[in-house]
Length: 533
Image (cartoon, rainbow, N blue to C red; front, side):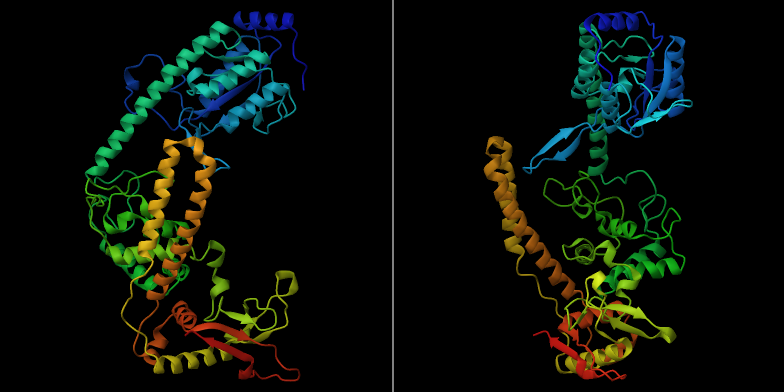
């Protein structure tokens, strides 16, 4: 770290920068690419472009380099901020459960750390040709104040470095002066005006989006899967594909199986890409599926992100629904419920057979895995000690599946599967808990000083809500299980996922005990089955 300058040297540096004499000083450029271009600006009629207009990395770097070198300084590298807003605030959760809102600028704050140290220590610095990451950094150059910040809190952090560490931060217009009190006061006024402009632009954008949303007008961008390019009329081939996927999921088929078959048959997204887990979940969970207008904050779950009218009803979009609402809600529960399969549980090899994720080891209690063998055969086997199992139990998968299938036939012949869906009994309790949570949040908003008492209560209620949601998801999964009155005839037409669902619904546990020594044939007595009551 470089030693701080004494008062005399500080004043000399300030005088030199004000005279635009940068000889002997090493400057790095801050290049910020914004996603907040002004949509009401008439660029063709503007004779002079400002930093706010230049949204190209190469141009910003070239202009700042030329400015520093023209004044005798040395341009040593760049701090690159892609797709970064200098004004928009993000919500940050605190340890006590409350939130604060801040402009997120990790690259800029890394540059400020480097200026305090006099050299790159943050890892954000990109050296120019001929320099390395250990080069000295005396100051920072930007196109203009707009590229530096539009947020007053950020400006004060920059002023701290210029005032207390005497590190110049300059722009190519020569008007940015953060080394003197008058210059800092002038910058504060300009940032206040820029922030007001950003706020007004954001407000106009929000009003425009809301105005289109209440009319059900579709948003821009790529066409959604299931609709045509006008985003209003159905693409009948894709709509049939979506409805079929919903029926299969309600019949117990895992969506990883559906995606695998779609990709194997050459069915692609609207962008021409293969189907992925996240793409499918976002599509099926979107309120657009039932014809509702998607609108709401990004921090809400997608299936809850739709606009409500003055009567508390979802706003209808200018496009028809594909599945009906009850079907969609049951699909959403499968995709987003608390006991949904996680991403590492949907891999092809982990649930490739009927009893995958169900059958357990009788020696250590761990779930058995599938071990493929030649000629289409496989074993259910316990993992080794290194993977958390005992490695002492193994059995023929084909024989075990056949035995469990016969048990299912016998059980369902005696107890026919009901075809009547029963409602979940905890809906009222869930509504009460959600109302309690809203009431507690309102109390905190009115009296933040009570946060130490309110947030523990909120966490208790959230735990109750999570438990109820898991219970509801389990209920809906059971309601979505395959239902037939002639299981023997229907069995050959069921896919592995559906057979697994039936097995899980009929047995509390399926346990494979260790084999006796000296026996090469599978002994059915090794299986221990606990039926569901």
